[in-house]
Amino acid sequence: MKVLFLNASPHREASHGYQLALDMIKKLGAPAQSNMVSRDLAAYPLPPITSDYARAITSREPDERHFALSEQLIREIEITDVLIINTPMHNFTVPAALKLWIDYVLRIHRTFASTPEGKIGLVRDRPAFVIVGSGGHHSGEHALQRDFLSPYLRYALGCIGVTDVHFLLLQGLVRGEAAVTEALKAARETLAQHDLFNAQNATVTL
Ligand SMILES: Cc1cc2nc3c(=O)[nH]c(=O)nc-3n(C[C@H](O)[C@H](O)[C@H](O)COP(=O)(O)O)c2cc1C
Image (cartoon, rainbow, N blue to C red; front, top):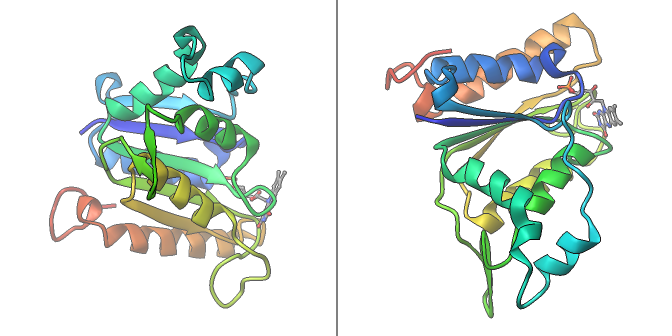
């Protein structure tokens, strides 16, 4: 089982979501270099979209050279079986670092086709786990803000064909140790319901 791990947290290893992602990767048996593609979008940000890329992506006869980075990022999805994303919520949605990845990966005629019925994904479906770290709450009874991150990311991944998306919400991370412990416990319980991490199915346990 090959895993693609994307980190979009500027806290990197200090991010609780990052550590949970490493646990998941370990339990999937993928930490060996050959079983894993790891891309740190926060430490090594992708370059902003250039005019060449913007022109190529909307051109009928694009200059393929401008797709080199886009192609590399798409191949990283295609050669792996499971996608794990650790992302913070930044101002109610995805951080800029992850948005750039989306802008390179959603490419007409390559990862999706535009049809009279709408966009159709061209990438094989696979499980995707998205760990979302947030300082406050955006879901459940304590929610005091809107969540534009999970519906947006679900829609964007669905656009390329990745529809088996599971969100693990780490909420209230700036509210002290007890809140962090509670958030991690809830995320692990959610995760345990998935076949890949379900103790009964004995693939892995967390
Ligand atoms: C620029 C910026 C914007 C943020 N916006 C939000 C927000 O809209 N809602 C929220 O609950 N927390 C927000 N936070 C707090 C982070 O989500 C919080 O620090 C969380 O721990 C990030 O997860 P991480 O430690 O995995 O990076 C923001 C933090 C930064 C730096």
